Amino acid sequence: MIKARIQALSKAELASALVALSGQVDGAVVSRALDEARARVQPSASSKRPFDMAAYGQRRVALRVCYFGERYRGFASTGQGEDDEDDSVESALFAAMRKVRLIEGKAADYSRCGRTDRGVSALSQVVALSLRHRAKLDSAEEIDYCGCGLAHGDALLKADAATHTHTHSAEPRAARGRCRHGVEPVRGRL
Amino acid sequence: MLPEDVVVTAWSPCADDFDARFRCVARTYRYYVRLGAECDVDAMRAACALFEGTHDFRNFCKMDVDNATHFTRRVDACRLVFDADATARAGYCEIRGSAFLWHQVRMMMAILFLIGARREEPALVTRMFDVAAMPRRPAYEMAPEAPLVLFDVEFPPGTLDWQYSPEAARAAALRMHQRWSRLALGEAMARDMAAAVLGGEAAPSLLPASHRPIEQRPVGKSYEEKVQALKPEKRVRHSCVAAATHGAAVANEDDADE
Image (tube, rainbow over all chains, first blue to last red; front, side, top):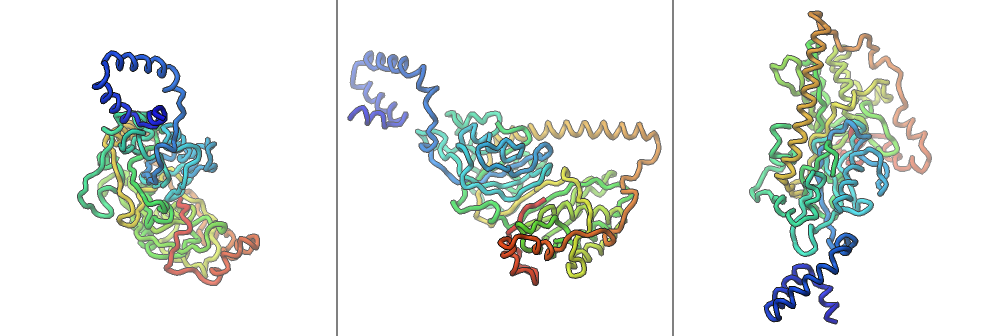
């Protein structure tokens, strides 16, 4: 009974319960219990625990994608499946998303704004699909989907992802204009 | 994670029924050009103006009767843009429209280049829109793919709320800048090599040496002939449009924009 309740707790809830407990029992007992737990759990659990995608929730998102089409066979992948090694921009996108676990297997509810042909580029292609919602299980922190695919893409799975997230200002803007190219900070140099 | 030539520049939450293709209300393409001194820019500009409006573009696309049932598309704007004082006249042709047919932009550009080369006149565009007089597209090669960029896509106000990440933008800008530097070096090298090889000779014309007028070329199959060749079950959806085009009601059925 108590074991099941403990196992149902999130990391934050567990930490809070332990801190409260350490105020009531001998500190040395708690300290020893922590050491034993770490020794028991560390070698296997963290590396072998399967990633439970469902626990993170799904969210429908639109992405603005910029690409040089030179070395691609076009934007659209032929497969749409998990096995999409076909040198399309979409395949590269899906592969990166699987790597950082934004999707598993096939992209869900996927739509693209326009196809572009072999060798054609885009400054502003838009796709929509369902992606992992939460960055971590024990917080409501937003995922920065722009970060996907950059060198710090791993950060999606790390605690410091929050520092990369930026919600733009609430000031009204023209329907077209400011956000047109999706890369405001570098617009002048494109 | 992503290859260096692909960047996710912004993201937005969206409704469960949001569809990136069918909700899009306008697409803008840029076709980058370098126009030699011999090019008739005024004629090209006149032709650009003729492309604007709602027209039947079947003679400016690779007709795909499996997917498209009509060829009327709206072009909101078509304009040639380059620095007035640039010697090489490098710039782009920007085309904004609701939706585009397969290879439409590259076919439009091919005709535009022939007009710039004084091989055809701007009025050819108007004659190619007249599908009663020209029901079958003359054979001509579309412009190359590399200079074409899907530059912007628009959705109804309030549909999307773009979120940016300064961190991601900085990383992307760095990679873009590296690419630009690399290509600019190649450009400078090619320019000096060309000048050295020419050694004072006038630059050769890049225009095609011979030209067969578009309207005297062999033609492909008409829309009606292509529909007739379809299997009966695929022909069904075309029956309603066999008599006339859809006029101004441009459905978003086909956006195989290239």
